[in-house]
Length: 94
Image 1 (cartoon, rainbow, N blue to C red):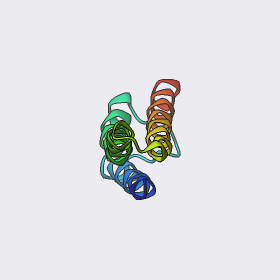
Image 2: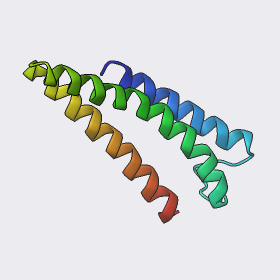
Image 3: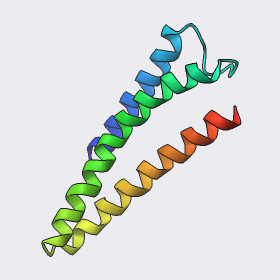
C-alpha cells in the first residue's frame, strides 16, 4: 500500500516524459492516438504494479485468516481500476 503513491508519481513522470520525448505536450491534447498509447501504457503498468501487489498479498493474508488484509486488498483494487478507467476514458475521449 505504501508504494501506491510512489507508483503514481513514477507513472506521472514517465507518462509526461514520454510525451515530451515524442515532441508533444499532454496539456494541448493534439497528439495522435499512438502517442497517447505509447505514453499511457508504461505509466499504467508502473502504477498497477504496487496495486496488484496489494491485491495479491492482501488476498494471500486474508486467506490465512487475517481479516485486516481486506482493506489493502480492496484499496489496491479500487486504485488500480481507477487508473485503468481514467486512462481509457482519456484515450478514447481525447
